[in-house]
Image 1: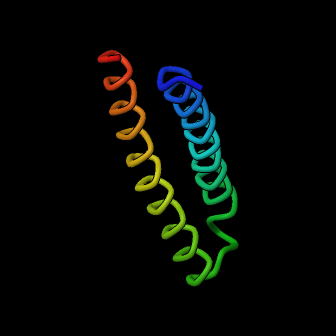
Image 2 (image 1 turned 60 degrees about the vertical axis):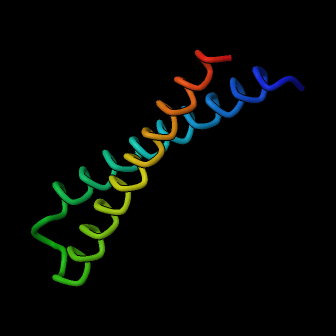
Length: 75
């Protein structure tokens, strides 16, 4: 497998990972919005930590995607 094919495959996997993370983020926010009145403080904290963690991982994956895309232009 050439370096170009390997980079394209890595970018495709990363795009799938980004879509999954984004959908998870939307799902967590929807869950929080629907159940905000029924959740305990502990549950709210857990959901908030999960949302922040998801955003951090999403930002890192997006940064890596842009880096790999720019690297692909140089090949």
